[in-house]
Each structure stands twice: as structure tokens, then as C-alpha cells.
Image (cartoon, rainbow, N blue to C red; front, side, top):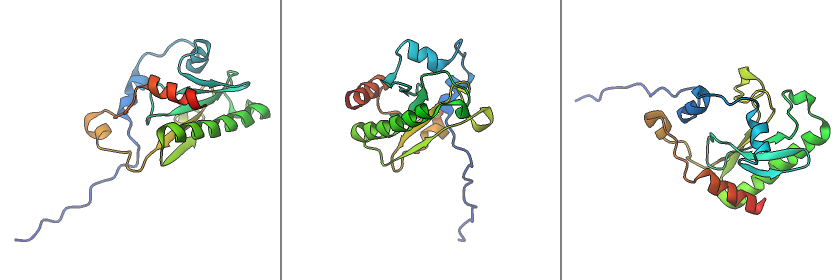
Length: 164
């Protein structure tokens, strides 16, 4: 009996994150989410002189943080040089803290500047720091519309604060 030939499965060219639909499609709070979180000290890992580190409420992976200027700045090119320097210093500190607490195999670090680039919060510049592990992508987001995050955000926040 001849084996049936099947074409290789199509590999999508998009990274699917359906668990983020709560954020994307849900009600949006008034004002800037990052400024509000900073004012309420909500999910803040570290507050520097000019920039801060905050847990991402809708993470791509456990330990996903964002680094942002304290000043509400919608345009990357409007950030003053000392703030840019502090943001990069805090990005490095966040990665060091995540290495100590989460032991990732790598990181994605970057900014989505503007709606066309995928910015969910486009009116306050911020940089994402996403810890990655070998094989961390699995079938759950595609099949079940869920992402398995192995630790409560408050637990990760406490661990990061303790080593930051």
C-alpha cells in the first residue's frame, strides 16, 4: 500500500497571542495606563530617577516587563538623552534580575513605536523585555486560546523587586 503524500503543514507568519484579546478587545481605562500604574504604584518593579520598570499585565511570557520614562512621552525622539541612558540601564538591570529569578535561555527586547508597529500603548513610549526559554512556544495558544504562565504576576513581581 502506497503511503499518502501530504504537504507540510503551513507555518503561520504571525505570532499568535490570543490570550491578549482581553487587553485588545476589552474596555480601555481613561488616561495613560503606564502613568496610572505609576501613580498607583501598581506592578512597579523599580522606579528610577527618570524611568521605571513595570510588569506587563498581559505578558507574552512569565516575567515580561516594560521599561518606560516617568515623563509621559509619546514620541521616542522627544525623550531626552539622560532618560534614554537610564532606560537602557534599567533594561540591563531587568535582564539581570530576570536571569537571577527566572533563569531564561534568552530575551526579546524592543519597542513597538506607533499603531502600525503594534503598539498597544502608543501614547507613552516603553520598551519590552521578554524572557524566553528553549521550546517556550507550545500548542496551547493556538488550540485552546490560552497561554500557560507558570507563576502569578504578583509572585514574579516580588521576586524581581527582591533582586533589583
